[in-house]
Length: 336
Ligand code: BYC
Image 1: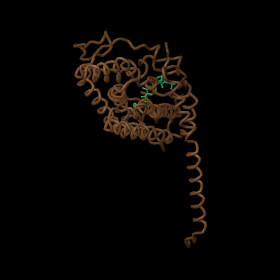
Image 2: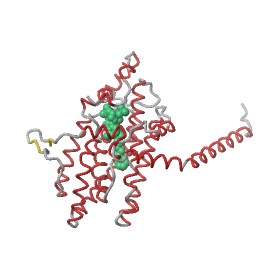
Image 3: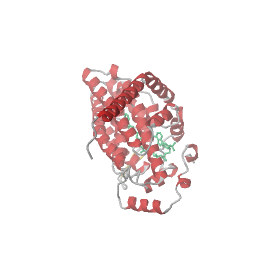
Image 4: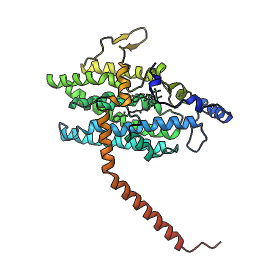
């Protein structure tokens, strides 16, 4: 029902299966990895550039909600950890832009699309961080959800993306643990601290579940992306994994999941939940989240402020290349 609200390319049109595409599919079905030098269907390349660049944008925009708390971290110890984490997220964005570039994606154009509000970034970063506990919840739940998704993506068919995911996951697991540790401290602290942790979970729970994307039957890209093994597990499968993992963690912390319908189904060995507010999800991913506009404005300002640096790097690169050329012209030629 919602698929038509989403501006996505009609992959069926792109993918008229010819012999080369069939051979490509056979490689995928055999579990082979695809390198950037291999031939690939245009739809495969475009789908990857879309997904990888959205992922990169999410890492870069995702620095903002946490960076808001660097100056307000409750101790020097927490501040240094948070600083390192925010820098890691920037690094993740850079790995991912590089990975998109291996497919012919142009980083400047991808960035322009983000700044112009044409490209998506993860829905979760349109929500505000109102208290220190939100930093705990971001690490515990947001990074926790990201790990579930990204561990699965380590097995994606496109090798440079899988390699980036592998490196990112190692850092994400540290992020998740530091978030859980913040929550643990708050939940073992005063009544006010415990209340702050509960309030934060109440505000972030449903938004975190939305990170996995629409239900499989409403996800326009899933079927083809899974055929190509760009996605290895579906949106709903990953969401379920996440819920089964974090509900016992919340119980351990002594926190209540804000879902009256949540219950453990003994027969299936998994949790059942209430329904996500999909109207809210589509509002957020079309740019109408609480802070969607503000996140973009901050990014636009930062980009404009750093324009001089881009120019300086470009001028320096040009100068270095010219010097190298001059040097090679004056070098004595090797006798034939
Ligand atoms: N938010 O057909 P579907 C992090 C869009 S960063 C926004 O299921 P697909 C962190 C989707 O893009 C974590 N948009 O799509 C960073 C598509 O739109 P278009 C970021 C969403 O691609 C800093 C449309 O809805 N992780 O953890 O097959 C600090 C239809 O959906 C969302 C990644 O990016 C959403 N939640 O599956 C801390 C992981 N969900 O392009 C932490 C990589 C869906 O048609 N990405 N959409 O306009 C993926 O795994 C997949 O792209 C998704 C969506 C599962 C997200």
